[in-house]
Image 1 (cartoon, rainbow, N blue to C red):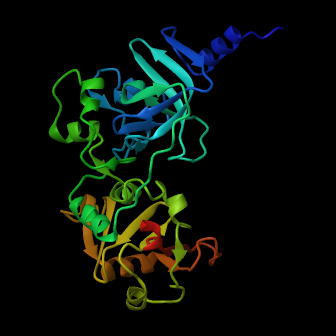
Image 2 (image 1 turned 60 degrees about the vertical axis):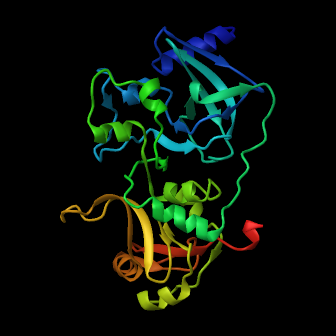
Image 3 (image 1 turned 90 degrees about the horizontal axis):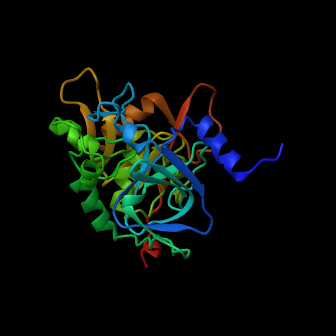
Amino acid sequence: MKITPLFIVFCFMVTTGCSDRQEIKDYSNFYAVAELPTPVLNTPDFSFVFGKKDGKTLHLDDCGLIREVEFIALPKTAFTIEKVIKRERITIYKITTEDYPYPTQEGYFIDSRFVKTVDYEPANRLKRLPRKKAIINKLVSAEGSSYIWGGNYKEGIPEMLSFYPPHSSISADLKKQWMLKGVDCSGLLYEATNGSTPRNTSSLITFGEPVTIVGLNANQIIQQVEPLDIIVWEGHVIIVLDKERVIESRLDYNKEQKGNQGGVRIRELKEVLSEILKERIPVNNYEGEVERGKQKFVVRRWYSIKQNK
């Protein structure tokens, strides 16, 4: 049987459950640049995520998180557009970007209203690393922000309420979540560094240089660390502010204790290290093997004067 482009598009629509209101086109040499902070999702169905069928419900998992959100692309982020998907009045782009170089089966998607399209390959966003003091001040200013999965823009994106308006009044907390107002653990660092650090912990575990911590206790590790070192393992990162304090964003701190709900919090370095050492083994390099069944963590030093020149 001869396979035509139309047949391919039809099969794609059937296998992805697309309605007949959706139009999908392939593009080559088609690009876009973010004009606003731009949510990047792992699904093209933005309307379902932000509104569902009743138009006033977010698509949340059992932990209350919008797992479809991958990250927020900062203004001037460059995208390569692979497909254009039109659903009623909304145009969605399937994209790739050097700012989020992680493997995916489903693909990554953005709403076209956040970007401008160009017919030339744009330069990648300039990653200008702030000075150490400015990064620390930005981190501290995030204290009290909500934990948002995929969030790295603590002020949120008001356009989400106009592009995907709730069909009725919603609570203040739901409005914040609808706007993606908050940060996750690596998003806290990403925003403070103007997107100069990797967005995911899978990259942060090898980012910068290792700090020697193998076999050390909490007091000894404290002597090794410097401001902006990161305590990290796959799934979480904690940022050192000084010899006494760290800052992190977590979904929760202690479910059983009142006042220990999630968000960005400054905590005592020694307390945090003592908690970690109960569950994890300090190693110098994350690739190193540990005893079967044991978890591990590393400390990485990524900030240097040279990086800021």
